Image (cartoon, rainbow, N blue to C red; front, side, top):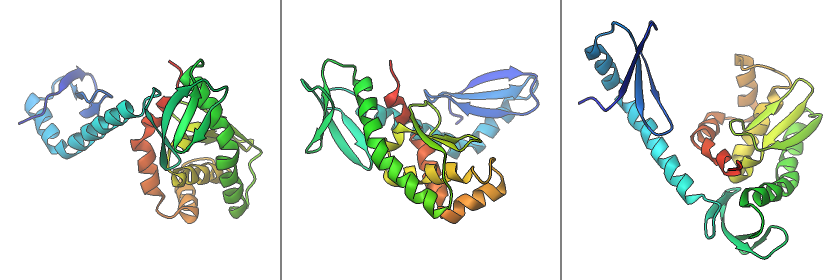
Length: 223
């Protein structure tokens, strides 16, 4: 039995499958490709489809848990903080609880608090890893980019997403090594990945984890 799917035909030459954020499967097919061939291809890709849709369901469930609301859970550097909104002037952590000012937007307060944490938590890791790799970025900036965990420009300016603080520390290490490696290899060539592997053996697992948890950056986006 073929799973439900939407069919879009065009002048393309090949058949491709896509799954959107809602989990909807779409087959994009050449104009004259027989439907039986399309459905046979879908059956061949059933394992990939099931895995992708399961991943999206898991991410949707996590997003429902990680809400910036009273009593919500916030992942923070491999642990969890419970959110409470109180009459405080600035965010503070007490016994596993993150207190946020009730009179300010939650995202604004959270991003400001993460920036102060990044100076020590992420800054220290950049210093240590850059020294080990004998590199020195010209500057470090912290962002709330929606789709990028980090970047390095040709002037050596390193940008790190504050959402890395919502991940286990080892994920931040991978992103830092990845971006520092671009100071020597400004591309994604074999030489680049060999350099990443040299400093971060088994980096593939961390890279996959970040892809699967890319929704964490959404917690820092203003409505």
